[in-house]
Amino acid sequence: MPASRPMNYAHLISSNINDGSSVGMTWLPEMPLELFRSIYLGQATPEEFPKGQALLIRKLVKGKVSEVIGMFTGPFVLAPILREFLETHEPGVHRFFPVRILTEKPENGATEHGLHWLLLPPPPVDCLDFEGTVFMDDIRGNTWSRRRDDRKYWGGGLPSQDPDDPCAFHGDKVQGRHVWRYAIGITEDRFNSEYACSMEFWQFYRSHRMLGWGSDKICTVT
Image 1: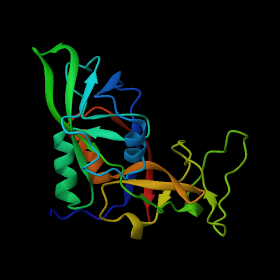
Image 2: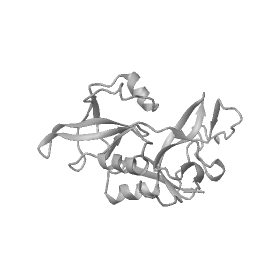
Image 3: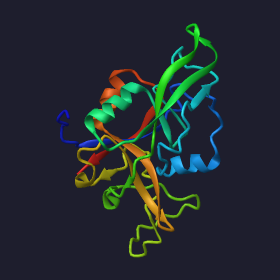
């Protein structure tokens, strides 16, 4: 496994609404609600996932399949180059299911565009430094509770997206990781989470001019 540089910064990431990579998509065959829920929770097994599962895209961006396809907060379908990066730098950490990519109309003379890989959402990590992070207020304008004495509920909400507001991760929880879900709270013993990635992963992603993910904020790793 390649040696990774110490991580001093990390990116909060989600679907990019500004690069034109948003697409209409349909699972073929249609994915049962129970299976999608199992995938969303990161619990699905290879035995559950249909062989030959395809994803039909109604329009390609800039004549190519985006390297990341998915809903705003996941799950995400990744290009082979991203799967290779994660399996090389985080061997044994992530699980992937193969997905055939189809388009309604021929693009570059074809309607079949090879395999992408559905990234099973990784286990969320309780790694946000609540004291070093400024959070958005809830929909009522109230500051989110940071209490952790009652494990039925705690949460800091979403980190502020204002670049001048601080955001921090605990280094002992994220060093050596490259793509992870960070816990923003627990409701009834279930983690609520968002995605983050290492600076090294983000630099790789950007250097290949990939589409699909955007950086919402840069956080320090302390």
